[in-house]
Length: 162
Ligand code: SF4
Ligand code: SF4
Image (cartoon, rainbow, N blue to C red):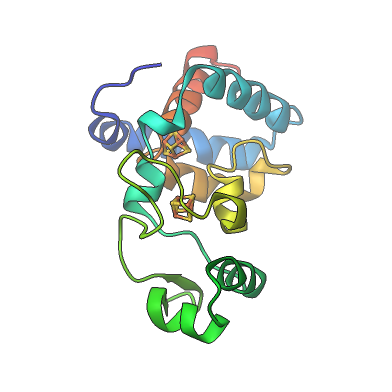
């Protein structure tokens, strides 16, 4: 799946996507999870995250306490040192990275802490989650970050089911 200028295209489609998501929130289709999950599988059969890494390059995952403990252990430092070195608290009171791209991303788009990476990284872009209806606002934001989410939402519009 090659999407040229996904960010620009996502920006152009923002209003249309917002209207679609507002409609979904109102209608609450029973098969919403099934459609998202099917398209998620289809998208990631075609896209290779190692050619993209846009999530790691542009946004920070949230770091929960268990993530900080696991990563600190992996790096053989104390959790407090991990926080001092890499994190700050954002406006939502969550621990996030000080910098983007993520300091654990290498030049070949590999995650150097893959086995200990935060839960949010494991679950990104969240389009295979249960109760997608609850994370439509997040999904709308992710359209601009993740080409797979962009493609999934475009498929929704093409199907015109909703
Ligand atoms: S932005 Fe989406 S497609 Fe790109 S690396 Fe992240 S999850 Fe994969
Ligand atoms: S920890 Fe790994 S997977 Fe998570 S943002 Fe950093 S490089 Fe990407």
